[in-house]
Amino acid sequence: MTDRKNGAKTDGRNANGTFAAGNPGRPAGARHKTTRAVEELLDGEAEALTRKAVEMALGGDATAMRLCLERIAPARKDSPITFTIPDAAEAKDAGELAKAVLASVASGELTPAEGGAVMALVDGLRRTLEMTEIEARLTALEGAK
Image 1 (cartoon, rainbow, N blue to C red):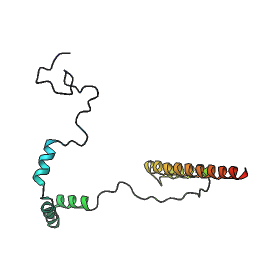
Image 2 (cartoon, one colour):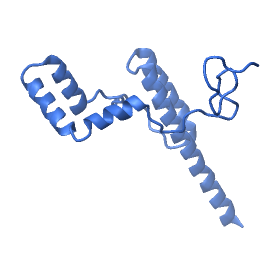
Image 3 (cartoon, rainbow, N blue to C red):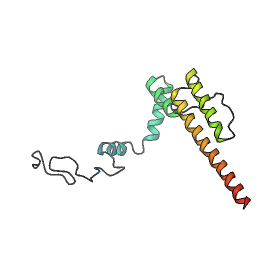
């Protein structure tokens, strides 16, 4: 490969300007110089800027209102869901729970994403119940000795 023709060779890079193997680039947490400059300009002004945004929102500025509301009550990333499922006392009952979740997704009671999240919970419950049953069997076997 040839040396770079558009400037000095940079440490940690190949001759063609790409990162060398094993060089991850910037260290984790490194901040861009523009970000650092903006943070320095705003340093100590956060309270005044917040107060002004609230005043503008109260004055009827729609953009300021939206910004204030997004900070006060951000959009929920997750919300509780309610649907009926059978009781599960043993690991073998997890199949019935899974059928109930699939039926709820099929009927539109749950979204597919919500169904996936609930299925993950059902799987966790199944594993917990299995371990509880295994522990009970082991205790019974050890007690029989």
